[in-house]
Length: 451
Image (cartoon, rainbow, N blue to C red):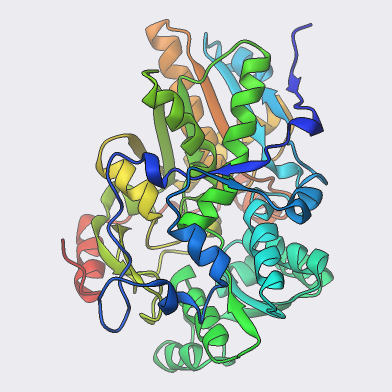
């Protein structure tokens, strides 16, 4: 039998992260100070982040050593397995070879601990005793809670209210690891109080939750802020995914033709895709396909412009694809993809045509999830299911054209805490949302965003 699970030996766990910044086609535009709108210096970020993470955010070094303490915790689940989705291939009757990198094997069930553990390590090293953060679907909040519990830090999580209510066991998971979890917007911060005064029934958004976490960190000397996506240092830590995957494909004599992932802020997809940009630079014809919800179509309908990273305009401005920092998406179950902006690295690659964005409605995504679960056995998270839908479309295109291609998916997390969403889909009660051009134009205008 040919292998289904491709297991990289533990001794092959990457010892360095790959920093794509020096290899981008052109330098990123600098982040701007939220008050002065002048380029940020390292000192401007010190209230939020420890200096080692700030230096990583701006580093010109191509390779950055992974600390031993981080490697030791990584070894609890890394290297993660790469699977050949043979049953899915047979069901689709496609000549394509489909692989998925299962990041759902981590203790919190997603790719997020790859950066959570690193960020907790550097904060602990800097003498920080508490981290404040936001979370959408709960994947990032549970990952940071896990990391803080391993490294002895306190953790406060502002969880988007709609997900707080939809995914109670994600909340419980964080609490098991010792975190304090609040539904955002909350009465615990000045930011949250102001939003609730204007809209007591506000379902929340990642932009609002970020504002609350930033306010918390900025008003407590013992606390720093931790972000689970978007920023350069977050993508840096996630490159262990793609670095391992490249080695695993080499083990079976294969190479990626299409690299697929889902996008909320960009961390899981860039963590997989960025190392494969090295192959592209060497002349290999690789396509990069990034999937997002039609309810929050940042890459497919957003504007490439400077915008704030949060709703209260406390975070820096970054040049990125955005729907406007005040945009509040509908209550879709893929809570981790309900963010108004995207990583500057990913945004530049989309803007230059290197990454191809696609978008899907909820029901199409859950149809793909059910197909995957029925063939491969694993129930995917709603976020991850966007990547599966894109990959299935690519495999069917290979069938129609009669071409063999190798499709690689970052399976960013399992859906064991998303049964309410599956229940709604199976009952035919899952609504589809698609943002109109008019709605998006209004959101960008209200946020004062222009090219």
